[in-house]
Length: 108
Image 1 (cartoon, rainbow, N blue to C red):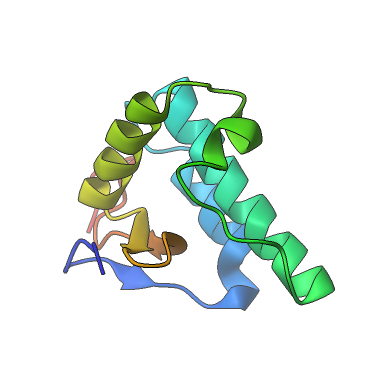
Image 2: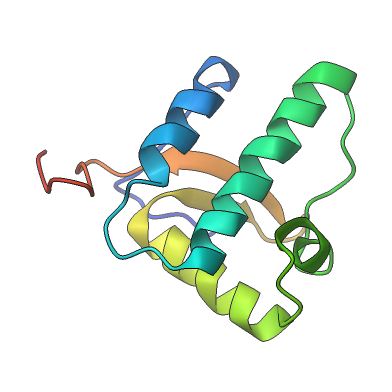
C-alpha cells in the first residue's frame, strides 16, 4: 500500500466528513480536489449499491473530467504524500485517509 505512515485510514461513516475536511487542504490543485471528489463519490456509490466498479488511473479521467493520466498519477502521488489518500497498488484502490496534522491550519 502506498500510504503516508503518519496518516490514518478512516471508516465508512466518516467519508463525507473526510471529504469536507480534505478539500480544505491548503494548496490543492483543481485536479487534486476533483480526485478527492471522485474518491468520495466512489465510496458513496459502493455503500449505496454494494458495488461501484474499480476506481483506477484509467477511470479517473472520466470521473474527474481530466484527460491526462500522467497528471492524475502525479496528483495522486501528492495526495498520498499529504496523507489524504492511500492506494492499494495491485487493485489501484484509493482509500480515504487523514494526516496527523490539520492541513488547513497546520494544527496537530
